Length: 102
Image (cartoon, rainbow, N blue to C red):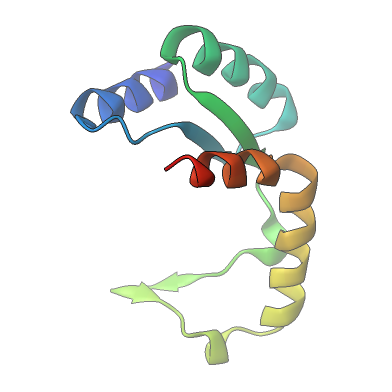
């Protein structure tokens, strides 16, 4: 899994050992289950969830940067949809727990 190798590379250069967990972006629930086991077993860090591809809330970028919030149609609807997804598939309590020990 090249994704695990990439995380391992970041951890190698993290001399202060600040990386405590990972959230997978653009990941399916099925893929997350196998990645979760690999992260725990091979890397010893905490899998904190995933965010799947969400085409209906995609925010386009433009050359040299992202669009400003005022330029995004239905930004409040999109952010509310993202928040609902995060509540479903991300361990927010786990993130808070890690942040308290930082």
